[in-house]
Length: 461
Image (tube, rainbow, N blue to C red; front, side, top):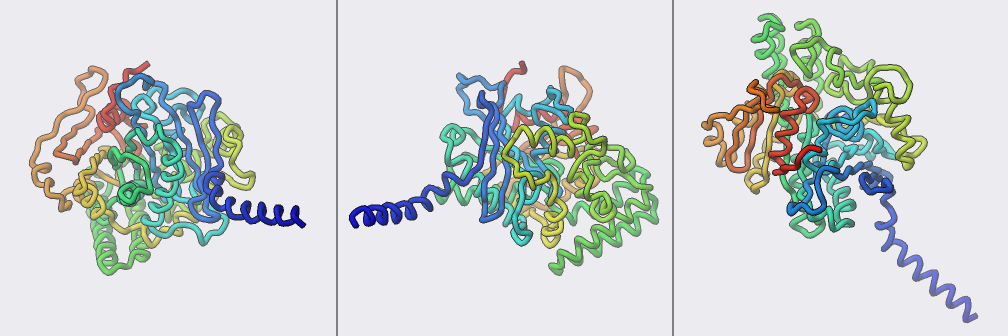
């Protein structure tokens, strides 16, 4: 009788303690023996799993008197994988042939890649209803991930986190920035926000669609007939956005891309000097190939076209082959990029929603905001980016706009690689010769820019 009471008591204690420790057991993680890499899953909501991969920079010495900066890279799409594309095709330590990348951003910071939102890359949901439908929902999930990763590691808490985003990732970045600040102020997140960098980002869809026609007409890629059709659809999109008809605006955006493609004989939306399909990074599409005409913006979601052998440069094969084997913790039934198309569809109602107000709010809070743009990008053109920046209500914008730019050079050469200017906590970089994928097209100037953003002076090895 006494034994049964003890067993019953222990059972009650066990049932009480399990929920308390469940949070500590939930993250499924692994690391390399030398501690240079770590990765894992965070269940940001029940049955919604987000994957992250952290690299510790070998270029930053332990005895440095400055804290180690960390860059959180956010890819676009929606549905494009930062763990895959940003990591292996743009800024990670290895390229998609698993060869060392000399221009890796690890030279200036530790790197944290996240497959965001859930359903992207290795991240997955067990129920399609759990896919996010707004940028704010994505920000909430990302904040949950940061709480799980940073609150458990005191050394990470000492490092400033810089959120760097590309393409649609910019909308995630600014909503995350505000969400993270709120969590920090509430004592829920132990993190230092160093700043946010927006690279060729989809912050104001209206400004971008109005830029396409005039820009392409000026560089002889479309004629006056194409310009007329383009401007007409851009005006239609403006009216739909004003009326809050965001899904309809997304449909009109698709129609406009088709018009631009037909009028320009298939210009590449990621580099207007090329024909579609000539930019290797923009070819990251496999399972969605039949939808390219409707979803060019997500055409780099899955993988480079190529053969199926590991290590031949085909990103899809690499991520579902050698990398999945290395990581070990990816569920057998999860295919990298397998839910990417669903991610895009779920966000259709928020895809064309602007996030200029969020940039204004972050600037007003004193957050360092860096905007950088590739000269020959079309989808997120410099012309469109300048338009939304000029519409900021931040109290320093007029002074910023009146300032002159400073030229940028690389490796001691006197060839102009770009321009920059800064005022208070707003910084802008014009990157010459680069398209949508700045780190790929201009790795040297991009790396120098990252050094300035993170205030890193790490010497190259």
